[in-house]
Image (cartoon, rainbow, N blue to C red; front, side, top):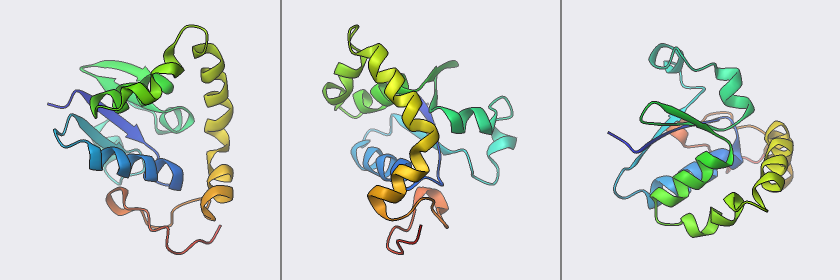
Amino acid sequence: MADLTLFYDGNCPLCVNEINHLKRLDQKQRIAFEDIHAENFTSRYPDIDRDDASAILMGDVHGQRIRGLDVTHRAWSLVGRGWITAPLRWPLIRPVADRVYLWFAPRRYRISGWLTGRQRCQSCEGGQCDLSDKKP
């Protein structure tokens, strides 16, 4: 059983890029990655609203839901890189980081377009967003 189930937006090139990076680092398979847009997602996770999971990153730690940058920090910690995200959880930085994340989350497609040339993935089979065709 995984230490974290991470529910991600498989239609977002930035999200898929981060997930693919985490997958490469997760050699002990401590994270289960679940694309909220997968065909059978709602039948496997009927208690998770896809719109809620799309609005803010969501994770599950042995039945306990975590959200936003808490998920990000947990995931990176599980692959041995928690030191990178730890400052985002420090008491003085946490409120600012959370506000920035809440600003970023609904704008991630537009920001992805600026950074990757593509706002949404057209075919993200199994989290393999094809970024070679950079059409917005």
